[in-house]
Image (tube, rainbow, N blue to C red; front, side, top):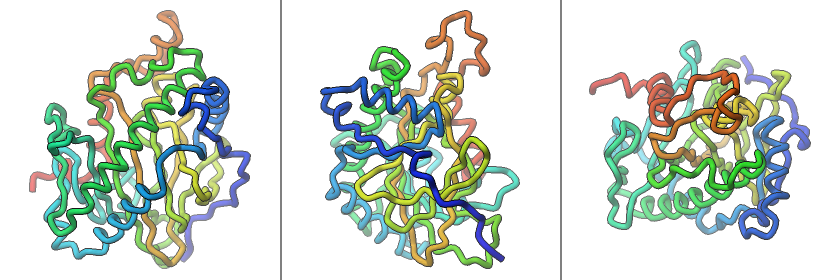
Length: 323
């Protein structure tokens, strides 16, 4: 038995882009050009100068690890809700019908106001669930969410400028975004589980844009345009950005949504912090907005909310259970 094979990454396949001048407005078009070049190629990007402090990252990482080390009976207190908030245990996610269930746990949350309230107006938006046995998690998680949301909006301005669109094009309808964040915990994966077992099997992300904060363990693998798999190792002080399916669809495939997977062969536990940015549920994903009404659109227009419901119902077993 062995692990799924992947090659060593040529860093030129996944460039490292300093986005400082996009964030502070001194030279946004130069960063936009680099984002365009990277996203019309592989679609995975390392960024530095992202503005999320190590203090915020490390605080959430510590809280996350402590949460996942609790026993399942305790974590059941925040069992995932039908609104996709809370703890999702092993076996709860499968990216393809024919794949084995992912070898991971997750804890998911989304926007809430200062009083802890959130809208309940969509099947994928509802009240966050916070464990009573670890009150510090709520503060660290929301601090990260606030920083990650701001970063995603800044990046999407760059992606718009890269297509010579108004900078707010992709975030025009984002007053009540469907964005969510998650802590994703991968135990050490025994070799005996075989090459068809993954922490998360090959998939593309569902929504608009994903921000990934790896730890120093490694295990992420990405697929290039030729179908070959490569390790995407952690690089200090960077985050990984990848175009997701809705942004690829909105741009008629101009921006690439890249398949990726996780194999944790390190012998250590691994935890990632993920923020998936999506606009308001009513946002219409229509490539003709970008390329004109005469454009032969490969996909029919669909709302962000409807698309995500369809994808979530396929990927998460709890959404088909009534217990």
